Length: 220
Ligand SMILES: *[C@@H]1O[C@H](CO)[C@@H](O)[C@H](O)[C@H]1NC(C)=O
Image (cartoon, rainbow, N blue to C red):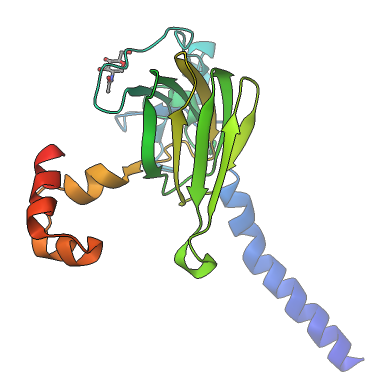
């Protein structure tokens, strides 16, 4: 009997410890519109909150996502992000959006989002997509060819990509589980860091001649 109530007590105190954490990560109030200065603001989670009495529908609104974006660049794609930085009503809500335009043969190159899982839906065209699991899981590639209306999930932190394998430009939209997911584009991060990583480090890591590494570093 004493043992039983002891374990009930232990369970309850564990719950009491973990419950506030679970609730806090789900957001702290109905909304907390981001502002950049602390005037009349309260610091909660990355941004100051606008006085709720001054919040309007426009704080939750952004137009123009129907417009095609130019893709005349090295990877032939363009990511238009809708996150807390251009849609302040997203502050504390743990969600954001991107529109991605792909030219023919264009790609969204291998990258990760340190703070978000992503779910992507194809609006137009055909995309070869994939992600690779972490070292402990054997770096397995999960890949799929997606057509208009198909959706695919990229789990948080894992390296993933999309490649336009169709004969026309492609468009996708994706939702991300953070107001500010962050992006680490692998090639740019490794070969285009500022300042550059010592070429011998990358030569050993990638099993390449240091000259090849320096060529790559000049590209990024
Ligand atoms: C993406 O499109 C915007 C215009 O919507 C443009 O300003 C920007 O330069 C484009 N980015 C790339 C990488 O081409």
